[in-house]
Image (cartoon, rainbow, N blue to C red; front, side, top):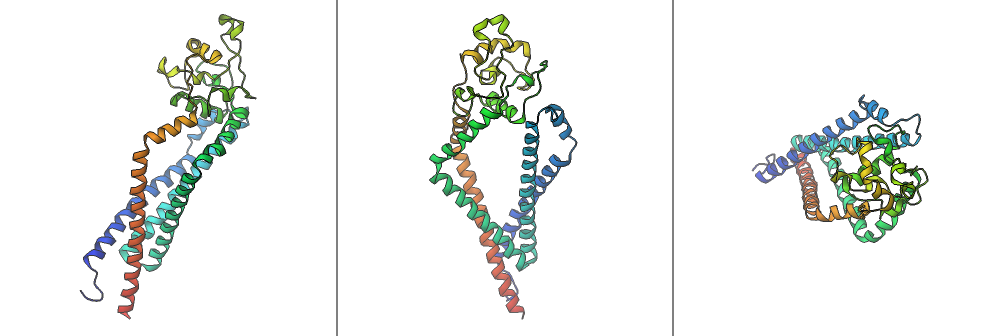
Amino acid sequence: MGHGGMSCGMKTMRFIIVVFNLIFFLIGLALLALGIYVVVDPSLKKIKEILPINSNPGVEKGLSYLEVIAIVIIVLGSILLIMGFLGCCGAMKQVKIFLIIYAIIVGIIILFEIAITIYFVAFKSKFRETFTPKLKEAIRNTYEGPFGLQSNSALPKPSAISIAWDFIMYNFKCCGVDSKFDFINTTKWNKTNPWASTMGNDYKNFTYPITCCNISNIFTEDWNNLPFDKLQSVAYCAVNGTHINEMGCFDKFLNIIDTAKTWIIVGAVIILVIELTAFIVALALCCRTKKGSKYRQ
């Protein structure tokens, strides 16, 4: 092999990094397009129709959360797009500066992922202590009840945060953060039972959200379009907790993660191997480019 040539192994490494970064580039492009779509597309008007901004200031926060998510998607997509471009061009054209920048970005990402993993493992017990009080406070101060969502309800639409809680509890069959008792001291929820006249004075007010009950086992309609008149059949559950979903949503999500733990670990290992491979190959190509430039002098 001459000084200006490239070994079979080096060609293979270059091919690998080009393929990896072409995938990064395409994923980044898709995420960037998705983020921009969320920000500028007229479909946001539909969200505004569902969430009455003028009558409920809390919904403004909900929309700002949506915009923040869109911005995060745009930033993530931009990073992957830049990584893909630098990796592909650096490997194909052997542009040293591109390879150096690419290796630095990948190295930072690897270190960040390792730091997050160490933090989660080391402070797993404190994770609950840190986040559950904040989630409970959010329920206490922002939850407004689900009845404004019903198809023939005249009640105003609840806030975005309240909708999010009802969505989670209905679809994942859980209740509150730790339990149903997280809703005892809510400040914005009108707990009046709309069927109290037919159920008696003992059932005048709800104690727990009706979305904590097993509605999905009785009805097949969408969670945000349930027939208002038919919900009375589970109203007793919302009053006295009969047949309510006892598990808190925090533990429910931990159970879901634990169930998928093997796949999560496998996926994380695959991603780490890909990143390490890309990092090592980028450094190898960078060194190869440096040697090649010496030979050409």
